[in-house]
Image (cartoon, rainbow, N blue to C red; front, top):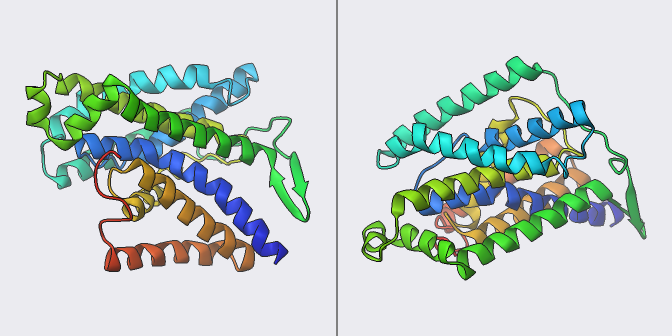
Length: 288
């Protein structure tokens, strides 16, 4: 029972973080109908920016967000103009080819700069933990999960309590109707993609105190993100949170009771079951 509770606790914390990985992907998919397979490498970019700042200035990864956020926003604007805007109305195959190509380019640039070895960031609270009964909760993981929940909540408020959020949802529902309402659709798409890139890089930076970064890690992240989005519902913010928690809890419990290898198989088993019985996911499509 102690092992089960430990796995459940770890799974809940990781589920919050997985949801953070997924909301940027969900935003781009929901508003622009673009499947960005390079999203995982955007997360990895946030990791390596935090690593670079730590190596040179000894800044905590959370403090490095002062650099990560504007850097990833500018990067997102550039990617939108060069790659996403030309392919947005093209078939899905064009999205896949273009964004996988971008994934490969980013991965190789990171490898050229930092090398192919795994890298970590060690801060004073990396190994710190609090103990509740017989359950050990890592401080770094807890900070990352709390930050993830806060950002997901703020993102939801952005979509539902601001004029920009209403413009984003209008574009997601009906582009022609959004134009008719006087919304600059192209500018909305541009800013939305920039925000999606920021969310990806942000999530990468906050997990560095307890994670290991690799230039090739983006593919694993985007696969898991895609599973989360399918389970939760394409383009749904609430679905990203639910999907992330499901995947995190399953991984945590199965890894604790059996092994991480079986946990990966269990995740994809859930995906197969969802595609069979509820292919639309738990939540309806759209930015809700």
